[in-house]
Image (cartoon, rainbow, N blue to C red; front, side):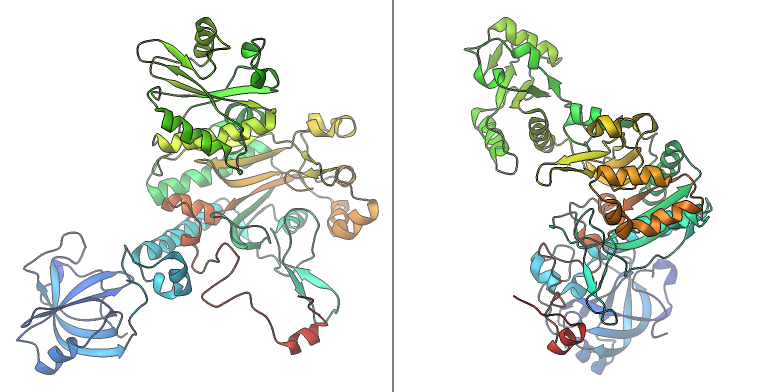
Length: 581
């Protein structure tokens, strides 16, 4: 080894030792008679000292070192006179006797420090330099630790890790596939897997009753902070189980991760139906770190000739505790916020419950004080509270109020990243109607089993059928989702029928799975966790990019390697592909 120790481990217990360190120059301070250099590696930082006692050639060489030079030094561990107790090595320094420059460095395009001066695009271009910074490095160390804990927990429950193919068949459901042309089968294409869904079901048919995989998945969809074109799942499947078994096993996984990685003991994870989540929060992934649940007033406010309420399918609001003192400017800001095109509300109605007990509303001319008292009572409001109301079509207005609720939670400091509120959401609709294609689509995927008691509704009222499906939500982010699967060929054929597949189409796309079901498929189900999202929540980040070593930007580009890129015409000719751009 070129070093005897790392730059993060030497302490007062090592005084007098002769050591050799290797690393990068973090900072250099030349004080005339003495030169101090901080040397850094992935483990930490150690101060080096070059003074009058150091050989002249070594001292002069030290003065030429620039930031990010790679060096090897040897010397004795001595006690620092000016200690830095903020770092583990801050009580010692190395009196250097030998110095070798292993490699020089250009001046980096941004400071390799915790608080850098580099913008996001610049740091993405030089990601290999960004990865030298402590915050990014610590995120990847956290990710590593979480992956090891996942494997340890699942291995302890007799799960086995099985790799599934990356070059598979394209299927029409879900997001767009990334496709890969086949040179040996001209005119035909592989797809990169959006998930190993069909393969893990086939593993259940094969008798591997407990499978998992930490696996790359690919979806060609519009990107945002918590999406990447390639992402990582903790993919799991179990046979001979019920939904309750799945919830218990994987709630145990989450609690283990919080305990062993964050040192947090989670209480039992509460459960909520999809219907209640939409009714109380307007979202199937509610942030339950704070209250502010929805209160419906539709029947209470009708009959007073206020057109907005009279024409509304739903009138619903939230109670912002202790916000009655909001100024007109603040209320206008909230109105502008919900009028943004992304939210699309037409206006905001408010009711102040002033500290002196009086009530003031933006619709006073339509409602008397008694009416407003009834509103306040329905909200369980107290003096000092501010009630915010929206009206319109049920589905639309609930989504709008969800955005307003989250904005109020942020403004009031109720969305603390160091507070964690997990929640199981259960009983999703099996199908959702698509106006554009005028047919039902699977809300999760076509292999999700309906609730047994709802199967008869597939023929009479398919929109009311509930899925045997579940999501795990933490702090308003869906981190995992799964379902009990269909294992009966006839029920699977019925599902394909209601999704608009002809028998021929279903056979062409999924015949291999349906054929497998004829050879004794066990009851089975599973779940997949978004590993990147889970890591970002544990790291207290809003974006998943900084828990991924080499992420892509919002355009799906890797600006470091300039990908995607054009390919040579010879390659296109071999693949019999012609571009028309």
